[in-house]
Each structure stands twice: as C-alpha cells, then as structure tokens.
Amino acid sequence: MSDNKMIQIHSPLDDSIVGAVPALSREEVDAAVQKARKAFYGWKETPLNERTEIMYKAADLLVQHADALTELLIREIGKDRKSAKSEVVRTADFIRFTADTAKSIHGESIQGDNFSGFSKEKFAVVTREPVGVVLAISPFNYPVNLATSKIAPALVSGNTVVFKPATTGSLSGQELVKIFEEAGLPEGVLNIITGKGSEIGDYIVTHPGINFINFTGSTEVGLSISKQVNMVPLLMELGGKDAAIVLKDADLDFAAKNIIAGAFSYSGQRCTAVKRILVLNEVADQLIDQLKVEMVKLKVGNPLENQVEIVPLINTKAADFVWELIEDATAKGAKLIYGGKREGNLIYPTLFDHVTTDMRVAWEEPFGPVLPILRVNSIEEALEIANASEYGLQSAVFTENIRDAFYVANRLEVGTVHINNKTERGPDHFPFLGVKKSGIGTQGIRYSIESMTRVKATVVNLK
Ligand code: NAP
Ligand code: G3H
Image 1 (spheres, protein in one colour):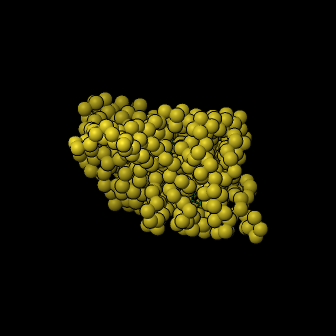
Image 2 (cartoon, rainbow, N blue to C red):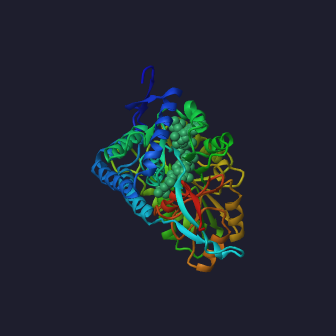
Image 3 (tube, rainbow, N blue to C red):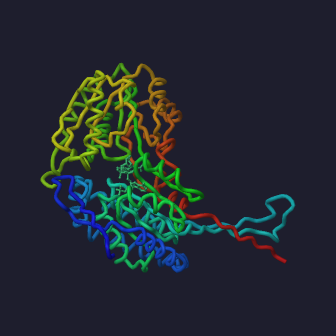
C-alpha cells in the first residue's frame, strides 16, 4: 500500500477523528478485483454446507463483537445506541437466515414431453449459478446491515465480492470484513476497497472484472452508475419519499405514534423514514394534536451521553440541505408546528402543516428530521399526490376499513405498502424494492440470493 493517501474519518458527533482508511489507487482497486476473480472458481466449487458453516460462524462472531461494533457505529455515524445495537444483532439474524435460505433453494428438472413434439428422452436440469464477482456498494446509514444484506447472499451463493463501503462507515465496514475473515472465508473471497466514491466510484463501476453491481445509496449516484454500465446487471435501492396516508376513520393516536417513530428515528436518516403525511382534512387538526404529543417525547442530543432519537446529521452538507428545505417551506407559507431550530449539524425535529405542492419539502427527500403535512380533501387527491413523486419506495395507510386500505394499497406506485404501520424495511426476508427512481430489482433474503444468481439449464438428450 505504498503511496496511499489516508482518509480521516471524523465523527459527526464532535468532529473528532475516529480513525483513517486508505484511499486506494486504481492499481490497488485492480488488484482487489483480480483477487476476487481468482478466488471465484474455488469458492463457487466449495460445497454449500461449507459456505453456510462460515456464515453461521460469522453470525456468532458478530454477536460476540456486538458491543464494540455498537460503540464504533455510535462514534462513526452518530447512530443512537439502541439502533446501533439492534443493527448488529439484526445483521447476525440476517446472516443465519441467509444460510438457512440458501440450503432450501433447489434447482428443478423439466421434462421435454410437457411441450408438444418432444419426448421424455429430453429433459433439462435447471440449477442456479453464481454470477461471478459482485460489487457491493453500501451507504453510510447502515454500515453493517446494508453491507451484509449484499455480502451474505452474494457469498452464500458462491459469488466473490468486492465491497466498497461509504467512506463515513468504512471503519465499521473494515470490522465487518475482519469478522467474515475470522469466520473462515478463504483469501480473496471478500475484498474491501476504501476511497471516496467521487474518486474511485466511476472507475470501479465500469471495471471489466465486475459481473454484478448491488448498490444502495442516493438516487443521484444510482442514476449515474446506471448510465455508465453496459450489460452488467444492477440491483439498486435508492432514495424515497414515503407517504403516510391517514384516512378519516384511522386510529389517530396509533397513527401518530407510528408516524413519529417512523419519521424521526436516527434523525430521519433512513431510506424508509416517513417523509410526508397526507391527511384527510376532516381529521387533520386532531392528528396534529396527537403528533405534537409524540414530538415532545423525542430526545435530542449526543448518543454517547444519552439514548436519543435526534442526533447530529452525518455532515454539514446534509444539515445545510435539510435547513434549505425548512427555509423554503417557511418562506412559502407553511405553518411551523414544532421545531425549526438548528445548532451546528443538529436539526431539531421539525413538523410543518399546510405544506403545499409548490414547496420543495413536499417532494424532495430530506434524509433528516423534517416532516411535512399536506392536507387533502379526498382519498383520490391523496393518491394523486402520493403517486406524483419521482420516488416509489414505500407508503403507509392508516384506516380501520380494510376495503379502503386495499383500495389505497392497490393504487400506490411503490414497492411496499404498510397497512396500519410505519414504513420500514424489515422483516428482512420480506421483499424490499423501490419503483420509479427508488430502485431496480428486489432485495430481501431469498430475493437477493435469486438476484445474484442466474439460472442455468443443462439439457440431457437420451440416445
Ligand atoms: P450516496 O452518497 O449515494 O453514497 C452511497 C455509496 O455510493 C457510498 O458508498 C458512496 O461512497 C458511493 N459513491 C459515491 N459516489 C459514487 C460513484 N460515482 N460511483 C460509485 N459509488 C459512489 O448515499 P448516502 O449518503 O451514503 O446514503 C443516503 C442515500 O441513500 C439516501 O438517498 C437514501 O435514501 C439512500 N438509501 C437508500 C436505501 C434503500 O434501501 N432504498 C437504504 C439506505 C440509503 P462515498 O461515501 O465514498 O461517497
Ligand atoms: O435506510 C434504509 C434502510 O433500508 C431502512 O431500513 O426500515 O429497517 O430502518 P429500516
């Protein structure tokens, strides 16, 4: 690692240096891809039960390292303690379930005589093959879990992996890789490359040694990747503007609790955070009263000191962006119900009523603690605004009427609709996907394994 520059990782909590990672050169990126290519054939031929044993061991090791990883997540990405610990434990469960699932995926054989003109003398043995070298690119907000949700299904299926973590999050990413190595992964099967996406991103996504790209991050970067690659399959989970639609007959106390938890945990730095409320006018005032009760309970501060939901945003650029949205809404006449205060990169939880469709906060993804309320006169108007978004990750609908719930769910252009619950990704074996600019393809344990394998037919012709 001769003339490498090192990148210092600063904590979003107090700007202290948490550690440093190398900014790899192109030659070092080439070497990582080469190692992954070289290891592929051996790993692909490793019996599935040996691959799954390594996964189970990695899950156990992750649990053993949970406290240390939790502390690192708190300092590196400013996550609150409860969410950080739950990210690690959830990831161990994810790995185990992935190993279990891989063992339950079988191929099939198809008889020729099912099709007219063919006999039993011809049949196809259909198996699933790994795609080769998977490039896994993860975002800052779940450095352990969203990295593993790519790495584990890829590896268990016989692929090798080149893993590019978000720069803020790459210290946690390094620890994760060490755990997989300690669990017994052979040399070259999982290779971490660190360095800024703006410097090595275009190079790695267009690298001829990459067979598949599994990316989670912003729509902006996702679009840029999809414009550059040719004939390389993509699996992408991108931005969102998840709506919580509250109908006249909703349990408003329950809806308010769910919406506030869904919007503000980890300061709203979650792709599935509730990012707008569309409420029927008749119940808007009552809902807002309940929302205020819940907002008061949100704890703001430094997660190293207390259990808090609202933490400083990941960097100043992110905080400036959220603040711009708040200023734009204020200037255009939105009514501030709560919050609207900033101390450095800490933005207090902010709720706006009477948000209109000419305001940026009605459409843009803040990835921060600001929640707009748009009042609507009918279910149709709620659907129209919900579907006018360029995003289509998830939505929630709150109602006591199952017919209305399905009416709304059937018309929403999103990957997942939650009836009477906040938007969220788990459980991790459910399908998880975005439509429109929220993504390409489907994740979720079985779906991720299927996405990162291809079908192969070997046709037998009896003589
Ligand atoms: P981001 O800025 O798009 O970064 C995501 C990853 O892409 C990082 O590893 C980043 O590396 C890398 N990257 C940056 N430029 C690149 C390029 N030109 N080529 C290849 N890779 C490049 O996103 P983020 O700020 O980490 O995460 C927040 C965003 O992710 C939000 O929009 C959120 O909605 C979305 N997200 C979506 C999901 C989902 O499942 N739908 C989940 C989580 C987050 P560097 O850090 O080095 O720049
Ligand atoms: O940030 C995006 C994650 O996929 C959200 O996952 O709903 O479990 O917080 P979560």
